[in-house]
Length: 379
Ligand code: COS
Image (cartoon, rainbow, N blue to C red; front, side, top):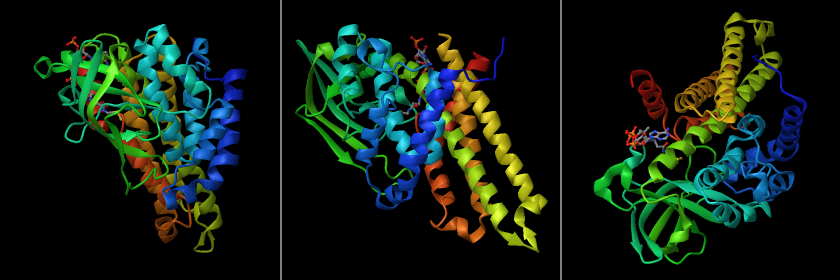
């Protein structure tokens, strides 16, 4: 049976997120963007409401939200500010490999503290010279007795400086390609770990991003997730899930773009009537509505597959690629509907465009998404 209705619990989750987004995020988003300031107080308020680290299982103190629930939260928060939602989303990106591959002792040790305050996790796969070809990472991992020693650097790490701990992917054997990769949890304050904040981002400016430098970082072997050699597959399985919140966030941005364009097209007059009387404008609104609707269904289907225990790399990639391209197009059209006013920060549409550009890039570029989809077709 196919059901297109949300159940009462899902509606409640969506409504909580919607209210929080409207009251606590939307009024401040423009200032956070202008000042590139990290909204610590609002992250704490989100944590109080249970909107942070939503993927932590109930047995370790979290809400253990289903992926569809997470998608509902994502759409609402991103409607208000994609950058703010990225802070929360990137923490769940760090949480996911621990949920997928951590022992129950590791889960209790790393996940429980995240539920006891406004604490963030992070995920470190990309490197300064290596992004899409994730198996070619260069950060080295050497096993020495009961410890693992890490050397290298990681790039574009969301929450990198703020996170309590970060899942670092490194190679124990570069000649083994993806079979040499290991995933290790590195806690903040570990000697040799340094975070270098990255400034000057085009959009999502309230979401902190850092380069992580690992210089002889020693962590116990007990911090390895799974076995040495499991890391690459774990990264892929993680991203198969976490690309869905990126897709859902994109739906939120597209919906906001449509609402802003529709509002302005009603207010603005030309040729003796509101511009929404012009077919040229109406067709733009119609295209945005198509984008919102189709992206949401692709996203919810990918989420539903995860919740059925059947995560599907191609379905997630279709959702992430399609929704982020559609949201970029919607934001672009919304800006155009605003004419010159769209090009300045008096209206929120320029920020939508700047913010959502990143959705086409992070958690795998949309070119990598097309690669993943194509491979599922020609396997
Ligand atoms: N789930 C589980 N395992 C997977 C997998 C998936 N979705 N995708 C690949 N694997 C496994 C394969 O089965 C293979 O294992 P075996 O050799 O044991 O069979 C191994 O991983 C290597 O797979 P493949 O040969 O397809 O890997 P490639 O090096 O060709 O890379 C891409 C595949 C390009 C898809 C991968 O590198 C990728 O996703 N890159 C983008 C990384 C990214 O998203 N970065 C953003 C960082 S987070 S902001």
